[in-house]
Amino acid sequence: MADIRTLPDAVAELIHDGDTVAMEGFTHLIPFAAAHEVIRQGITDLTLVRMTPDVIYDQLIGAGLVRRLVFSWGGNPGVGSLHRFRDAVENGWPRPLEVEEHSHAGMANRYVAGASGLPFAVLRGYHGTGLVERTSTVATVTCPFTGEELAAVAALNPDVTVIHAQRADRAGNVQLWGLPGVQKEAALAADRVLVTVEEIVDELEPKPGAVLLPTWALTAVAEVPAGAHPSYAAGYTVRDNDFYRAWDPISRDRDTFTSWITEHVLDRAGATR
Image (cartoon, rainbow, N blue to C red):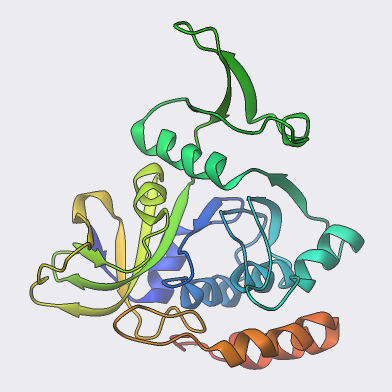
């Protein structure tokens, strides 16, 4: 059953140096507050997994905590490149970054396989790309029924999955809605799961299209209002488009980035976002 914890306590307990960590959320419900707590605690040598690493991973990479990135697309959505990501790949600053690239479908199917307890997933994809030659987690298999050659992708089982959601009850059951992304699959594939939520309520009211993650599938829940900022939580907060635009000049320069991280993350111990 999931424990209700403070964010600093939950991060300290669940995320360790060298872990493989997935922080998922598509467009909204991106767990920025949890990522900032990881930065404050200096948890390092991480392998980060995310279908669409954007500003949240740019910050973790720029803070020097990431050894390896497994992903399918990376950028500052609607703005341009991730400059801390690029600097790490192109110049090894603040440390060299290993990358493993997949397609969106490949990454989603890796989570599904991991959540299903299967060693790999099969899909039609990767043909005509150079990705197969660049990673050991993609191979080809021949269908025993049709003879068709298909792509196989290794299951993905993070040590820890971190997601944000709208609400949880006091027993640790979590409810999220809006664009669901792969939060459910990433949570069920992981050994440990931390969910930050906008609020903890006495009872979860049914909501059309909502995803319910039961307490027995989770490890810890932390109440962190606005914990997805500058992304948003449908029904609670709105996307801070100005921040995404402002991130481009902040992240282009190493000194400017370092000053921003120091002021807005490292010096805000106990902050929720």
